[in-house]
Length: 465
Image (cartoon, rainbow, N blue to C red; front, top):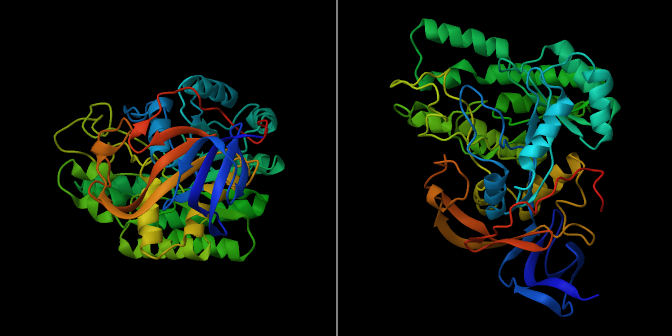
């Protein structure tokens, strides 16, 4: 067999090893990882570069319905473009169940939103917001049989928040089908009560946002999630963990053999809580849920990554524009109100470079841990491995070539999403992906990005190999 592509002489990094080798690709799949591979139709010299699996971003928000009058800036075309430029080759956004729609209808609608737009491959998580009718007995089992293996529930947010009984029902149905229940663990009743007290005291500025959802709110909901998982026997993923107190509960559950997995995000690893005290509207650039905490919490989260309490790092990309009237300022007003700014930050393109710099370059993570947290583990947990997240023969040729050791400054002007800012503006980067391949096809190369929107495919654990 003649190779379509040979990536030669790079340092191949997997979740367990690091070595110099060539990577051979044919028919969109990796067929060999070895020295001195035979001639290929296209040769790429990777000398001095890292060769890693393309990232799997297992938590991002793309082209979802309006929330608080705000619209996400990215559709599947711009989101997958930004992801590819950041070394990510698979994204996993959320099909969002709205009132009056069945979960099946939400999935069909989301497929229509993605059709003909994606540059790289994608899979869906399903948000469950209406536990009624035939959902538990019919819809969830049928969707699981169709290859959807992860369902998200919320303990906060009006219109999304489920009570414990409803969460138990979803967890139990997911367990029976071998699926994962993802949980946004914040106690919405506490958030609402605290918010009302802050408003009554006249404290409506954005610096009150963190006080409306302190660590205790996350800690309680995390503990409750673990208890519900223990009762049902379900496997749960606690998403976007922000605090040391929540991490303590996760360790408690894991130490007792409860099936609890955990995810965190760059915004929580960087100790960005002080930005919530910036004047005027500037703090809105950093409002997300849970709120970013301080450096002490961040240090504990890094320790959790090092010790294996967290299985993955995702972006939680949620790109509301800052200056636009249909974004962070959708509720208007000269004086921003902490309850009227839609929570969410952009981060698809910046997730991997930030984690590499703050993790690997700063000595907090090995390269092998980096690959595990950003590619291998999310693919395993959500049923996409070894097709995704792997450099082994037979895997899709989703590959990122990384340059490292030279510093650059992160600027939104250099990014490729449709948001109008990055909360990480001006941060130092010491490594970044210079070439990205999706199924063996080059989609990003040192400033050039493919225009082949629509080549990306929906994948799940039933997709043909």
